[in-house]
Image (cartoon, rainbow, N blue to C red; front, side, top):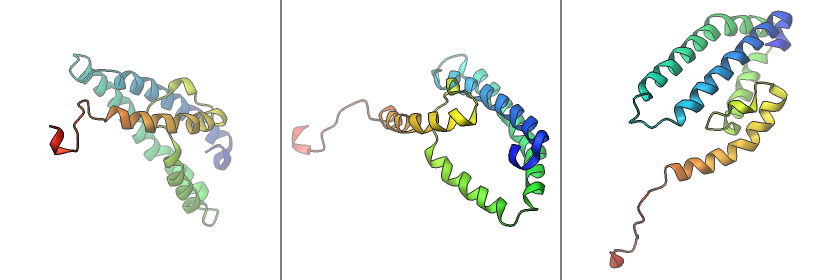
Length: 138
């Protein structure tokens, strides 16, 4: 946004970063909540409310402004979309609000956290009970 919209883009990007941080804080809290807890549904509703508002603002304001600015540059929009899709492969699967919202630090921190998150995800889903694949050992 900053690169293509100047001062207005920086203002929007700063506001977006603040909203992203709020969502990360809520998500981290929610991820650590047991599904049977009485706070589970209220936390989920709060998270969804903040996230929905942010998504609507981006779709209504940010993306049209950015697309208009990019329309003046041949192929720029498509190129950014492809880069965004590739980037999603390297982001953490869990919220890390302590990584901050500075893009110069958030990217490298995400690259460090992503492999650890992905390995931890495997163990979060790993079966609790050991079952032998050999039927003769039952």
